[in-house]
Image 1 (cartoon, rainbow, N blue to C red):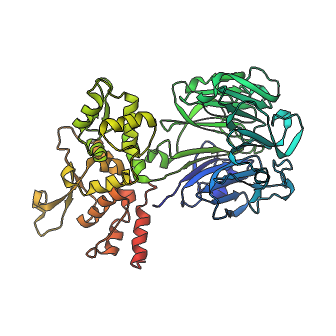
Image 2 (image 1 turned 120 degrees about the vertical axis):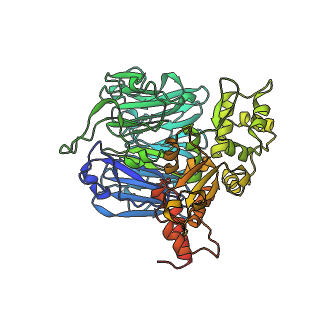
Image 3 (image 1 turned 45 degrees about the horizontal axis):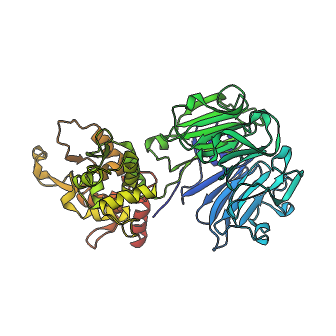
Length: 601
């Protein structure tokens, strides 16, 4: 499966070396020069001008101002990256083995939160041996401006680096060697910010959110502006209700699991235009469900579940010649062209901030699964419903029946026409599996599967990809036809007769899921017209279109001995653009494989 990512950035014009746009300034998004290649899992950026890009499973790339050549890092083969994070001039890498690795620019910042700070550099990834020597397995880590925070052996919190204004929660001034913070309760999550001199953590019993460190403008959310060198409880929040929380230079933003967004700290940056020492709901985002947060030194980005991007704050003062848009309150940011042309799901969009640059990028896993998930979320062109009266959920009949091997009527009887019928929440959990192979709410989903007499958990062979591929062979369930004009010797005046066309049977939901062109065509169809057929105007041959339709189901291209590979590659060379396919699909790479196989130029 081919994987790739598109990266857009905005910020100072000093980053033109990685931007395809000239004079890139806020708030304009510019596509980067970074080659679309493997899926980008994560980007972290500290004090500009450099940032780190994680490419799974064990590859990293560092881009730096003034250096057109990126630095590449490859971890040992047995090591797989689990996460990366950034401080102002330091990067830490966590691998699945529980080990920590570092990259640090010691020439720019002496307060590197590592034991061997004087030996660290951006030239080479170095292992941080402290945790192995102490037999500590690092589960997760996060960085502040000059500090590192490590969750070890499940629930033990260790810290290292600068203890400026209590940012480590220790009585000592500085600790380059990681030290434990003695907390009676079990720590489950840790949070900070690239430019923060404070941190937050969550405990399980009791279920609380704590903050510690510098409290400039009241950014700790504890109701005062007093610095904390020991953890203080952030009131009004259960730890289990917090999705994420992060700090900038003098503000903090908190998002709850139900999508509410709160801010505290500086009145210019907390999103409410008034200084707050406790987390306060941001009015402009009150009706929005936030799902992602990115904070720079003096800027904030929030992404909603409807793929709306809100931003506020301002650029770094070290570049006074640049023109920036300064917003005290959240304002909706126009997404770049690619993001608006293809409605990406919230699971694929990623956001990140540095001191003077922001990133917007896509992380696609499987274009087929992504397309089907978006089809479900769009709630458009559904042809039936399931659920109880007043709580029906629209679905695509052919896909649901394909996944369950049951008819819609059978599903309706088994799930909703009995005393113990499932509720809407269970229905949606079930449909996440149907459309995207996602397993959530395990206990409730298992009850649903039992009611349908399906094996739970689904066997390895019963995947969405396999089911859709098998559906291609099921001509009886195909409910739609593509009409393809064929060449013949008839006069032009007879060309509209039925005999001048051949038909390709297909499932309508497949066209809807995979092609923006067909979605537009169905949008414009008159309800009185025959909606079971559509004409293809591409002037492509029926042979190439049949191969394309099969690709829609299988994500692969396989040619028979009777098919001309050069002709097929030429015919489908513009298919991604013409049919408005997901720009991250693997059609072009599949055609490239064919060309290499048959030695075509």
